[in-house]
Image (cartoon, rainbow, N blue to C red; front, side, top):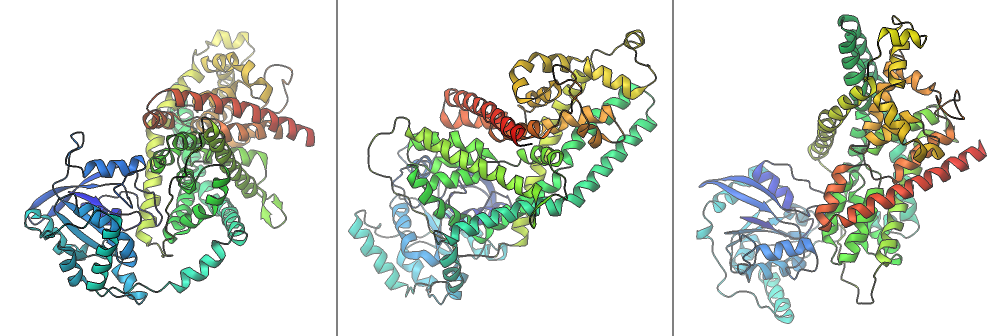
Length: 628
């Protein structure tokens, strides 16, 4: 069976309730852009259930709509047609939703209509006779509220015997006037009364959708967003840092084999722990994003930005895709399937990696902590949160400008494609939905740490500690072999990693980077967080008692700046800007390849973003050096 419905009609919530899975849901359109499959238990046994992307019509104009249309086309040999369909019907927007139902019924497949948001219809003084709706449509109709499992008994019974479902004697008409007349007859037969405009929604939208006040509220919300991330996460971050520091001390004290103790304490605990310490910020980020999604604010943000995007030759769908990249570029790139124009899809894909994802957060927090003291303030607000807000705002503006630039390439005159987005009513998100979203994000972050980052960290430890110098070599260099810190420093400075970092130094020297930063930048191509793990390993080996202090006190070892502090404000500014623009995520590159259909666009994206990152980092270093 397949689930079909318009965006934001409760389709994916129903899918999760029937299958026990946790596909992403949201109180805004464009969340489901791919096909999810699960198994639902029925009275007759398990049934494979597929959640198709949300669509307003089977007359497809975008790739995600084409998926739905092709799946329901029994003449399409390339797609396996489901044996039966569950169609979600939003009771609060019945007139609009029935157009999709009419198209689905004409496909000739067994259909069961699942009526959603009937509780909201009642709350807003609307009226609908469910039994009359079943008779008017000629198919089974089941009312379900919010995917509540206790209301699914009848639906599960029906799903066990789709061959026994009633079917309309005469299918709905195909022409526009005929469909409108059919919808009117259904509404009349069911005694349907449209819900009153939600007073709370109307009052809030008067402010939040206002061209001036709405934009100011949006900026204030984002500003408070980043102040909260820094203010609330600091105590938890300090606690995690203390735990990993204690673990490293215990390993060094209890393991007598020097190289093994160094590997475990500096490589694993120092490297991986240096990334996990930012878990509180990740959790807070997704708490706030889930709340904004759940209350329905993201659709308003897309509406506000549609005016801006229109001037850039794009549309609100493009901003929805960019907004989906706020936590990770991958779902944002996949969300471009909702765009009907190939040119606009490519343009938005090229801009999506510039939206600040959660992988940048640990890097930003580390560098901002070195750049600005936690007590520093600009007026009444914290300076660290202000810088973070500026980075996120800079990423968003750059993403939209980039999308605009690529949309100009090859543009030809033609009619604008239709863009439909409803404003969902404001709803209070459930604690369970927010908790699950945060848990999934944290679990994904920890999985990334234990797979990609852990593997890269081990390789980095080997590169930073090989070749191991002999005692004779150490004495010849004036190093006491019994001085562990001096030995670690010498080993790292003459390691394979140091050779690699110095080999690429001509590229990054204008930015003020030394070989240690270069190694971190190269390693971060696998995942941005590895940059933090790299510096964590170097700092832990340099000063096991105070790696954070060792990081702040590092000095340049080679060249004209030898002996000067490494992490000066100009260098830190260059680092922040470099990570703002550079494409350092192999997963994003792979998804770009899959969605664009060739390696051409991923190669262009990597090349132009690296060049842009280098130029903007040089500019940032020059400006900061001039004013400090």
